[in-house]
Image (tube, rainbow, N blue to C red):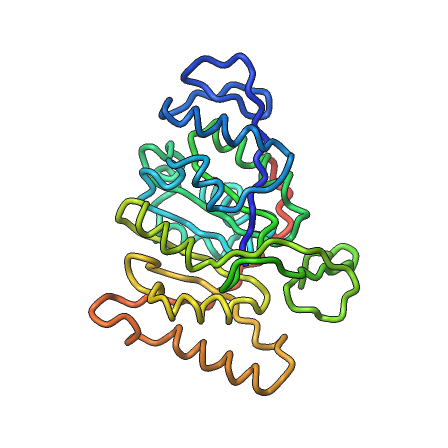
Length: 295
């Protein structure tokens, strides 16, 4: 499954070395990226871009990225905000993981052109499109590279998927999933072969460190099985992965048994031959889930 990206860029009278985002001129680190931004602007709120379409429009998307955070199941986008603005989330359990992967707060606060830090988020829930655009715009002004693909579902294939929504009041996003848990509301979202994204990223980005957080409400078993088949749960493709497993939502004994086998293979330290295996950490950080922290 995959997520797509809503880009709302409106060009005005910026200089040749600026790009206008949400009506404001933002100095660009690399003026050669202006043409790509103009291509993206043509899609302003008219539709969605898959990660591949976004990359075709902006061939610099992975350029100079040596420290990459991939947030799969991004929800409100809070984990990427914890990466760039950790001081606003002092109680976050995920902070220690981000500190170890990307360095201290003072380092991460510098422009991505200096740190090499890039973040990519995937989310199937269409609720968060405008919020992602707000964060992207604010971060571009700081020189921080963050890009979301939403609504898109990560999968082991490319196509369309039914995404089930949870209409349960204040907790409406809890349990929104590709797995129907008895809810009546659903939307059709694009899905993308996630292995293709990881493979392209590993080839196009600079050598360095790649951390992935995955929380996709049961879809992880199909996605990770495909990553295993493609040999992508290894150093160079992914150095570390944090995950919340969702065995509890599988209904049949056969599906639970198959999922347990996938978990065993993912955790194996003998799947990558001479290369180091992806380090797997079970971690679910729901702190600041609904965010609410001002940009």
